[in-house]
Image 1 (cartoon, rainbow, N blue to C red):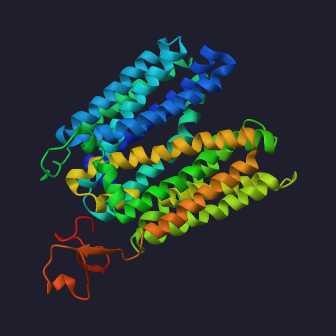
Image 2 (image 1 turned 90 degrees about the vertical axis):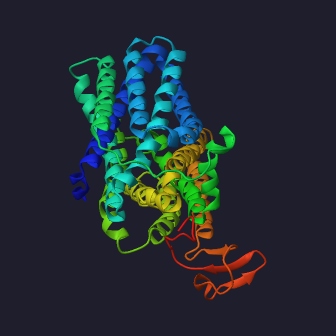
Image 3 (image 1 turned 30 degrees about the horizontal axis):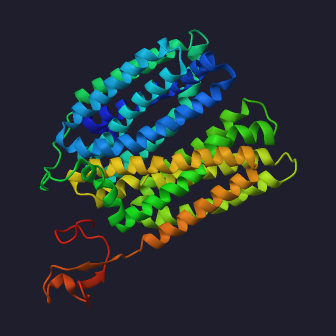
Length: 442
């Protein structure tokens, strides 16, 4: 899998991603401490609002960036986003009001909503071979998982010798280094768009979303995003509740639980490139999404069981299973988008995926927290498990193995129409993926 790092452009972009992720992780730790200094016991409320603002920025800004991204140099767009993030990190140590935190978090996450989809859309051009691109997707998944484990540990080590305000300096330096690496990468020219640049700004910003609503496998991806969001929200929001309240363990056990989730995700990310060379994405993503319901059933058993020493290792196993399943669904998504969107529309498609997937988390994060706090963890498990199962079943329905389609512009007797059935609007048939001029979304 590391063979893709021989590509100089990808190596620089991947290193930029890793450094930026570490900087973001340091900022997350420092922001929690800053919130406590400003709000005291209300720090949780401040951070909860900041998380909601983050998701709103992702949902609102990414489609807007997709509207103009094809008209801007991609390198300049990513560098500008990195410089904006570095500037926000520079101001964070001087914050002394809650509203200032909210404004700076919105600006920081808006810049991330510009950088990430553009970065994701560049990689298929840098690595045009699908085998290499699949490896790059797994590398990206590993980077996210390793950051979730490494950044808190690094922050803890640094806090033993410096104050938390200096962590924001580390964040700023990380974004500046990311910008420098992007500048040094030789990016290929994007495919020229043949579509006329007409239509309202709203229509352009919605083009990526329309693509998701048009292509069957992308419609299924929307449902899969919701299934994954249900599982990951349960882990992210309620890990501390399970460890501290249900199992009555020390605070030091919380990182172990989150680490089990990350370990499960990493194992699958390492195995996927070889697996996806032998089986199609659909055969991996849909069965694993359905298995999420089984994992939720196991979590329900742990939640409802009386005290017992077996529950702690069982919870670690369930969290690892959640991580593995989420990684198996999320890692191949770039392949689906790459196959479904014309090159000149890839940035809009990745922006739509970024926005729509975070809209799912915007729904499941507060649901996991609110239900767990007011109705109890059992009801949270039932509700989110039901969402995951329903979304997975919907994905199966929306993503046929050999999707049928209609050709309205081919004459009778065309070689491609062999075996097709005449319908009112043309000729209807089904077949496996075909990359030719007759199919906009093979």
